[in-house]
Length: 282
Ligand SMILES: Nc1ncnc2c1ncn2[C@@H]1O[C@H](COP(=O)(O)OP(=O)(O)OP(=O)(O)O)[C@@H](O)[C@H]1O
Image 1 (cartoon, helix red, strand yellow):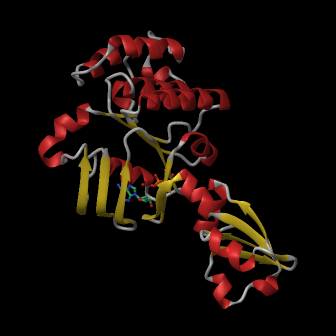
Image 2: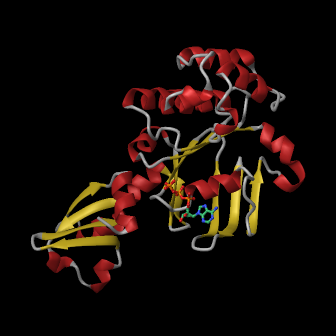
Image 3: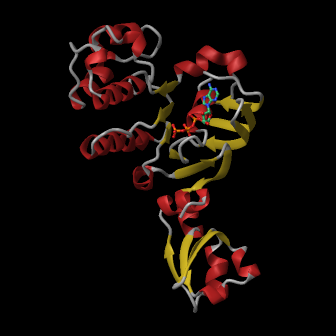
């Protein structure tokens, strides 16, 4: 659906370096990374809201440079900039946005309005944060887009609304014809519904793989400090040592099991563990 190859983008004090990954049809890909890792910048590049310094971004096999309109029609994304429409009611805003999309579907939009309990007559700048997010999602899903890109769709939402949004996304992906890419800090959300995970840290992709592969490879390992010689340390992404022993994250679970299985305790790492240990502040 979308493939980035060796994409670079530099700001004065930050750079995305050599990003390569793809978002697959029929699946939900979660995009995780700490604050300032480059998630929003990557998403802006994917939406052609920013131009890369080098590298290639292909969407549905096409380039923005020649097929901009065709591509944009097939992408649904969160409308982050509500300010433009702040003075309008949802009803009015819908009319404006509907004109952008040849496949806009009033019925689908109305059904999301009802399901998400959004008020047609309320002005955009009078919506709560949660309502604004839900409205963005309703818009993103109402023009039969094939690729849905969401930047932090669940942040700032209460647990009930978050679950509502996750269930909605899980339903949308059922038909296997679409792809969803969404960034989040809330790793438990991604653990729940993502099929693939792309992890970015300091402008670089740490990994981009299926959730099963990632959770099969990553284990938390606990044992006595004496076990940690120079070679063993290379098996760990990061190790935290205390007077009572060490805890480390490995991304080579099989090898660790084979070499030290009898002497250590191993448990599957959560996405949060993986993120915290990889960033280096366990
Ligand atoms: N227009 C810009 N000019 C210069 N630097 C920028 C610009 N936009 C973002 N940055 C910098 O790029 C880095 C990455 O920002 P980005 O918003 O992509 O991170 P993020 O992973 O989405 O973070 P968060 O989770 O906090 O939203 C940050 O250091 C930010 O200050």
